[in-house]
Length: 337
Image (cartoon, rainbow, N blue to C red; front, side, top):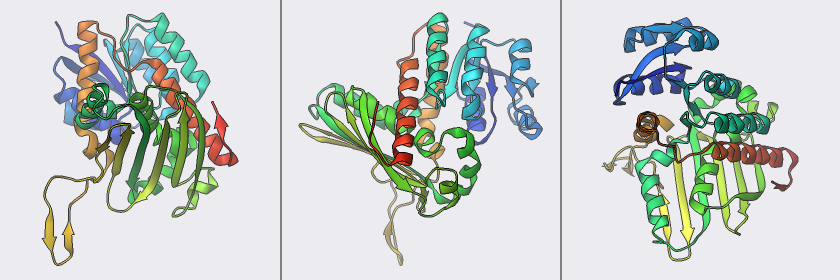
């Protein structure tokens, strides 16, 4: 079978990583086009990756690039419109999380995905593709820890990236939709039920600029599920030791802990400073294997005609819950979904 010709939109910090993977690490893929309003990013795609067709307009890329699929890594506020336009053109679509930043956007995408059911549509919930998280799910499905009733999950970014995020908050939906969206998806995936109620608290304890935007730099949310299970989901923009994502699943017969210490590797250092281990610095370093695996899965689904496990309704659920957490935080109240 010929390679799947892909056009990518968005060549920012994560978009460049996706573009590199598609160009070099995904068998069966050909990164044939790239789109960005920033000329320097297009120059990078041409020089570093050899992308032959470059566009400053997404609509122009859809109209003139000879591609089979679109990879959407643009700012969250553009996701919905770009997904709908690409599906309407008959293209397969990968979209980074969140799928949409409002329930209406997500509903529209769900309807479009049904209408275009022959096209592959995949959302970037990368942790589902991480080897450790996949293994934990396999153990859960085998009943190794019995019935899961509590998920504790956190996403903590390095403090040095916090100021960079201030501008993104204005259009990205804030800390719950941007950061906890992964924890929300994992909790639903592991518990196998829908969240019915959330109570979120937090504040801007280190960077006051987030409070000025109605957001926070550290938060915690207690969520309850329809089946009676619970989740404690936290986020922080102020980790000083490195990117610290970990998850704990408590069941009736045991506990699974994933990535409790954010180790860069298995080396332990013993010197005049004491005993320590180096930590990963950012989310990509922690989940590099997952990012490559999700890209390979997207292309494999297209080539085989297989439907991805992650469905549009998963993207809708994550957005609705993330918005409910934001509302709970801002109102200081329990929100029922």
